[in-house]
Length: 527
Image 1 (spheres, rainbow, N blue to C red):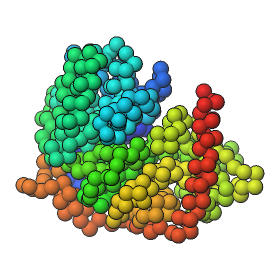
Image 2: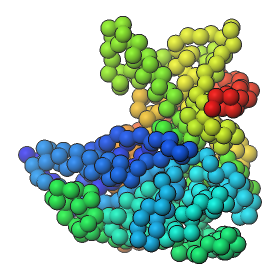
Image 3: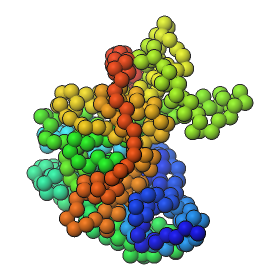
């Protein structure tokens, strides 16, 4: 029977948009066990949200599945781990009263209801404040006169909330905090000048607090962020097997864990996380020349400045089409498992014409600020003379998942001249070998690499940050720890941009931009 030294493990827990996943790694950073729980957001009273009861049901289920796997594989109950960390979907709005009561439903990153607040703050700060950011949600709620805003004692993100309940500590990793409020990278904290500006707005609106009173304390990677309390251990594992006392690292967002999981925390590195949403991160050598509404400025888990292109929708519409085609195959007596369906669909995409034969698709399940679309309506259209084949249809679904990202990345790579040695991909778009990687390289015009560990994703990245918290050598930076300890000798594949793909995507994108007026009209007409 295999042996396991639980004190030398690290646990990463990530609450993603469609799945909550727990990953346990060993001393060599390889995955020892994992557990997952599927969940979905809901549109309630005009907001995309998740109930906090569902948060804990999902967390407990994912942990229980992991613990069961540990028992089966190693013959021991999971009574402790060496370190752990919590990550989640970035941004959003979770306000609490002084007694810990939730004051408003969790408003996720997917909501595009803060346009006025985001625009006013961007102007006031001379710094882009996206609609998703916590401070935009807070200011919009104040502008709208929502009664609960006067009673806020603590405002946090999903990862910050779970960490708080597990440890009692009101803290955030700097990367996650950079989705709440602008960050001063040199200080590893909120930007003091912008904080003062916002405090003046709070006073003007008669709010009985300053920003520092309600936001989590900011910590850089490797900092002590509390330990698992007895109450927290019972929340995570109601069976009572898990013991308190486990050290936790600062909670991070899915952007930070993606950077860790792809070794993209140093300058001139970048990564693309492509799943329900898609975002690309580029660690900057120098500040951008000006403010761009399409570009978010966030940070690595150590506070380095990062330019982020975030698009609200990526594979949701593609997933829906694959599901429908699977139903058709099943009706014809050819029932196929989901992985096989996706492999076939992606392989057909590689057979499609480089410009999709004149097909155009918009994957907008929700609004998309990068293209100025306020609410989403998935839309597929074609000219009567377009070459409507399965291969072209499959290819246009992948192109649609990349199109908005391309528009944002052109600002960085073309207008700003940002240089990237390579772009590392992870997430569902890259699970089928070659296809997503090759097409994205052609679309963006940069090499796209996928590492063998890419399938482990954000929860593994969170486990790495937890391991760094307790295992790093004296003075060892996160960049050094990842490069020298985790990824030394790591295997992967790189797809260089293909000239035909790049030219074909450019032709597709011309039609895509022309058709945005149709997408906007659909959003206005179909309410």
